[in-house]
Image (tube, rainbow, N blue to C red):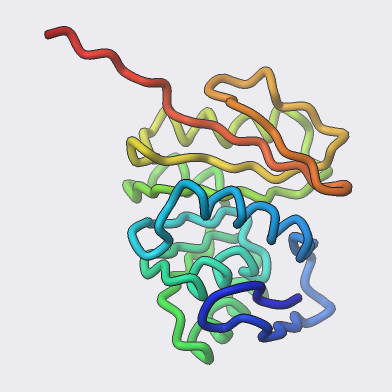
Length: 185
């Protein structure tokens, strides 16, 4: 895996083979960041990376100037790897070892971008819990977006606050936004 752009562009990161991860492909990651680059200034946002794995999405945000990044994963090997890698690159990444669903139920952290990359084998009901907890607990900033990575064989387009999906090979990114609130004058 490599960092695609920014301060650490081209740096390779090799995770131990024993970790139970499936990093986002470079092609899909590049496409995702092209979309985000048209909407956000990376140095002005906060990021919550759920099911962070080896942290490839977080490293990309940090390389592009994001200074408020929180990674959550329940696998000790993954959280240790992210902590060591972030320290080695001097990246501002906070790492939390936790079950993602328990974390979402309890956290008060709000983010501009929440990225979730759960196991592709999750049943649709497990995928549905992610946006449900994010919106129920008001974890997105007003201009924020939730992005859920999943297999192209998993359809989550019927979930509340879904806006659109983009497919890259076998990977799919589904985007969710807070509903616009209308104010009475």
